[in-house]
Image (cartoon, rainbow, N blue to C red; front, side, top):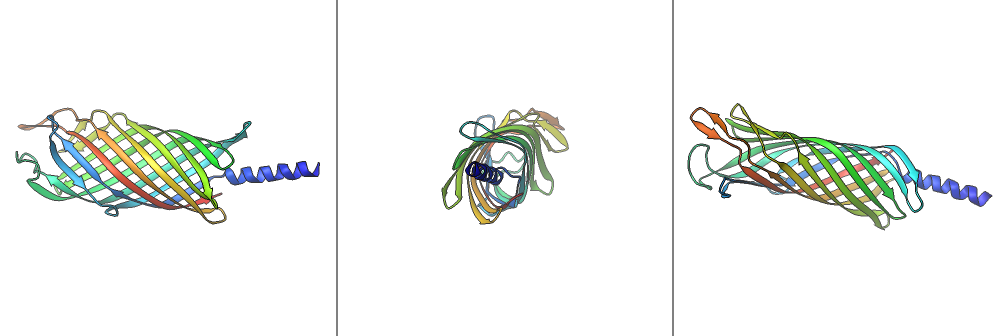
Length: 265
């Protein structure tokens, strides 16, 4: 009987260590690669930055609200909130608006500001030394693109998100993982030239490689490398004075690097 009681206590302790609320705070930097194409598929402008030129902060909270055990694994449900903010300059290569000059005729710097907010429901399956998780959520993004003192473009849209990930312990509590996620926007818009442009389909996907290293009791160092692809279909056409404008097809191919500290409580 004593052995059974001890085993039950140990099981409860292990489960308490596995399933806890988590708060993660850290820094984010991006290597940015952006391309716009006209109706014929020709490049009309590009923007690029190196890692450490677009920087910001992020925060993530996992709130545990349910847990139970199955035959071969334990299950936990989390409500997740995530937010990030970044800004930085990119190198612009293109042409001046309404100049009719070719790509490459004008170069400058563009100030970009990015905001993202997410709310997610997360289901986690915990095995002996590994875990499998699924998330489903909603979010909102804002991207301000200041090409000059007189030309500001603001993209904004809500989106749905789904992801799947795995994490495993490989050595001395060092955890590594892999996560795949996809986002699909709805009612995406862009404000520019005192008008609102309705964007076409906007979607993205991410491939993430996270690591986690224990620092102290209930405090971990976290880092992850993320590749993000985003596609923006062209907008509707808007008549402004004697000119007809539209936001062209574009795509982003970005590398994001995160580094932070995770607190368990």
